[in-house]
Amino acid sequence: MRRAIDPERLSFEATFAFIALVCIFFLLFPSVIILILSFTGEETLHFPPRSYSTRWYAALWEANEIRDAAWVSIRVAALTTVGSVGLGVAAALAIYRSKAAWARVLDMLFMSPLILPALAFGFAILMMFSLLGFRPSIWTLAIGHIAVCVPFVLRTTLASLSQLDPALLESSRSLGAGELHTFRRVTLPLIRRGVIAGGFIAFMASFDNVPVSLFLQDARTQVLPIHLWDIIHNQLDSRAASASGVLILVTLAAMVIMERVSGVTRFMK
Amino acid sequence: MDRPVQQGNPRLTTGATGPRLGGGEWRLALPLALFFLAFFLAPLVLLVSISFYDDPRMTTVGTGQYEAFFGDLLNLEVLWETLLLGAKATLLCLVAGYPVAWLCARSSGRVQGILLFVIILPILTSVVVRTFAWVVILGREGLINQAIVGLGLSAEPIRLLFSELGVVIVLAQVQMPLMVLPLLTTLQRIDPNLADASAALGAGAWRTFFKVTLPLSLPGILAGSILVYAACVTAFVTHTLIGGVRLLYMPLFIFQQAMDLQNWPFAAAISVMFMISVLLVIALLVALSRSSRSQIYG
Image (cartoon, rainbow over all chains, first blue to last red; front, top):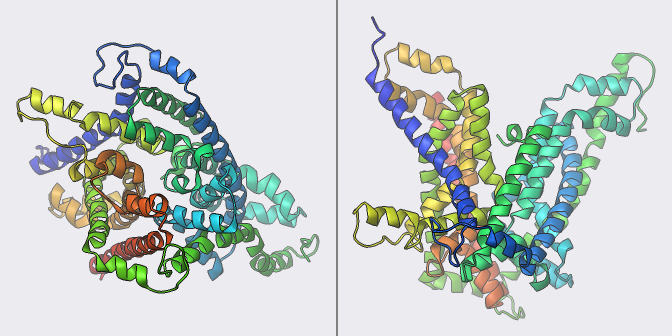
């Protein structure tokens, strides 16, 4: 009797599903465009390409500047990951275990780089380093990146910790295990996935960071995203497309692997 | 003193660990706290201090930079345009992203896993790469203009690249995952019985959405909007690649003053104004959602 199709419900669901599908299409669209474009056989970037080749990937091999920039970015991202995980996991343990007010305050402080304009912070830390006489290096870059990447590690680690059964830690302690032993043998294995996911996100965030690197890099330590930005902004070299193609494929592969290892998508919600 | 109590009454043991935990936990947070003190708070304090120098060589102290900032309407316009750009992009992102979260929350198992993967992949892909695609798509001879001219919708290509509309669209697209993920989390927590109850009481699907689901998802809307807004106003790459040099927003403005003109005090002053304004907008968002929440439950 009331089985008839409800036109209002239909209009609601159709509208929402339509917008959602269009948006999901557009989430993938840019990466697909760049991948197609990176196989162009032409001199200039024009979509769709009239002919296809792998010549721009081959050209990448001789692009020393792109390779140098990529190497700087990888080293900075690795340092940032180590620093963020070390500092972030320790802080997450403290914040998780303490119910005191300072823990809430620190939590807010450590998360604040996510909402504060990163570019203003980048400029601020540049001034500090330069007044202290620190020369720009991958170390200063990494320090700036850690400040803006640590929130990711903190968030995923806290998410893992919140699912931890405190009784396990209690029993480890009451069985006589010390703090460090409990951490290594009980806590760490249980929160491993959160820590790995956080480290992965921190690595990618550092690798992709522009607002902080913009101020902390110099001619010798130009990072890859800014080098690519420079190419796209100024001459629109076709190698930008093939370099982007490599980045897309590497990101995709890394994410598939990390999804297996740590279920990274669960931690990003 | 740090030795765990090894024998004796288990209740005594837990009793003894309680206060010890409360007292010693801060030590684990100390390294990051010191790091933040030295490399996050100290630079920000320095930024504020430097903004109170009157001259680029930093010799005389005063409020000259702020007077200069407020004295020229052009500066205020750049700030206003940046804040407005963030608001437009966030709004578009919300309207477009909500259905994505809705669809994802409704789907189950494998489909949801795939959808999540598709939503998260762009966050991890370089922003430069994703924006680069839009340069190609929106350009004068880009895909969209080929379609528009080809379909006869317009005789001339439309100016999308280097226009504010283009920047808003690309920002909304590039930052969309940041909106969808918190929204999805809240939508999944809403009790489906509430929507059923609303339907049983005779409300249609649209009415149920606007009166039940939407208000209940306000925390997710708020969290997503804050993240997207903060990301949009400081999105240097998108501003410059899509907006070009003629559309000036705060990030490029700060960069030009700091690096090209080497005018640190003025760059510091506009950075401070920029940070304060962004934090005020976020505070406003929080306050708005608080008051509307009290209306729902009050």
